[in-house]
Length: 148
Image 1 (cartoon, rainbow, N blue to C red):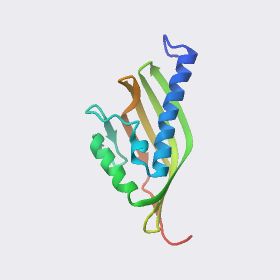
Image 2 (cartoon, one colour; image 1 turned 90 degrees about the vertical axis):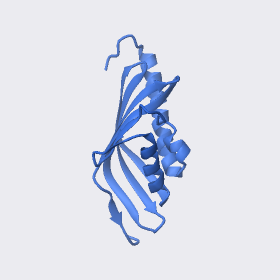
Image 3 (cartoon, one colour; image 1 turned 180 degrees about the vertical axis):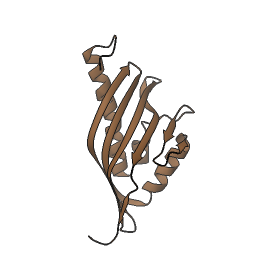
Image 4 (spheres, rainbow, N blue to C red; image 1 turned 30 degrees about the vertical axis):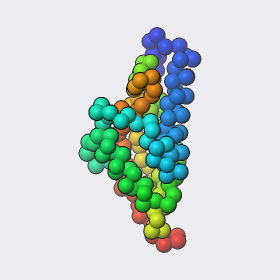
């Protein structure tokens, strides 16, 4: 996408900054470190998330739902299948991410989502890139019990 008044170097810098933010999300989820996992999300009234069930929620609800689930996990793994970044201007960008998620629960069971997708709309908030809108799509996870 050709962004008016944005040099190739500026666009590349923005893409790298957004990639770092999503890498922190992945690393935080995998380390079960909630601060690192959700640090890129805007804790503001402007934040909106659409869940896989079509529900809309604010930042606090999104955070609580994710922390509640991650607290049931002993490990969590995210694998990027594909991603694309669209820089719309100096202050707004879209990060599209297709991924696989595998959670090992403290019960020993595993939840596996073979394919999921997320769209992050990033905006500059006080000079930092923050997710101001998040949309997640996936089929329900497959619950795997036993050692197989």
